Image 1 (cartoon, one colour):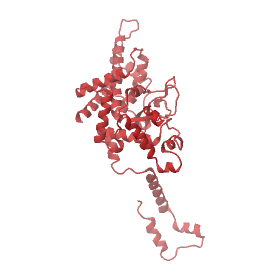
Image 2 (image 1 turned 180 degrees about the horizontal axis):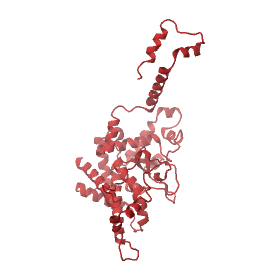
Image 3 (image 1 turned 90 degrees about the horizontal axis):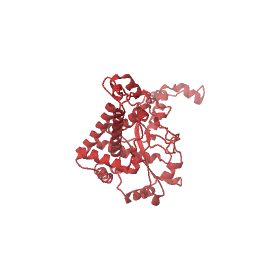
Image 4 (image 1 turned 45 degrees about the vertical axis):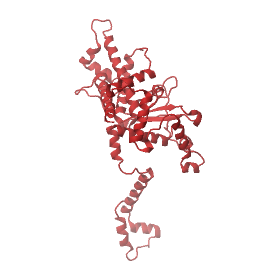
Length: 384
């Protein structure tokens, strides 16, 4: 397990170095702007072509990503000289641009492997190939979203459709260390890349992803992994080291069994309303920004499974979440009840008991005997 974790962290470190130093030209004197996680907003229901979370009017990024890398290249003579070739008609070194684009491709392949390994139960090759960072003109809805400070990629899964009649929507949440690479790439590198890029003719296929996975596993583990082989390994690891509620499901028939168990175990509250939990999540009291086809309860279960996997892999953000949630997780209504209780005690402490008695009973009303004295300690009681 230590070697496996070492492979993942080594791949994350190399991907970060490649992105920051070779694609964004970072240095101690000119660092890369930090990702403002608290100010990034997303609207999964917006289907306009070209739209992603960076286009949300509520998102406030510290620099303009459309111009940032162009300005960095233009302001630094040493960086600018990498792309210039005096004596040519255009003044641009075409080979230098091709080398830069090769590094972009290398980073994207490493990032695809990282997302495949760190998001939770591994996706299949066609699922990974379906991931879009932005909505497309042809009507394809994007697959990368921001949810409560975490990057999540969402895929549709059709296996078992004949049995369940349902297309499964799968959420895979990335650890902060990997999500940061996704945001940096989309925010700062992609606009620069799109201005430089010319079609290479090389398509993203399952064979290409398979070769990337084989290469990274061969370097770190000494053996080549396939998609199917890694899926079996990840499921075995999760069942051995993760809690039962978030352990990955086995392949093939067990997924249909899982569907049947979910339907049999519908919430009693939903059964009282005469429908299943799945229908309740799809139809009733949906959030106005809920992604089409997604169910909030299932999404939270996917998130719990992914974050457990992050903790197993040793990512710091997952370990911090574990420390924050070391006590029993409180239900939302418990927190709201506590807030209401504190508010009532604060109002009671400020209350004029004599004036309130007269308001309720009339101007002649007054406390008898020790009742006034008894009311004082009750007002001064410690707030729970």
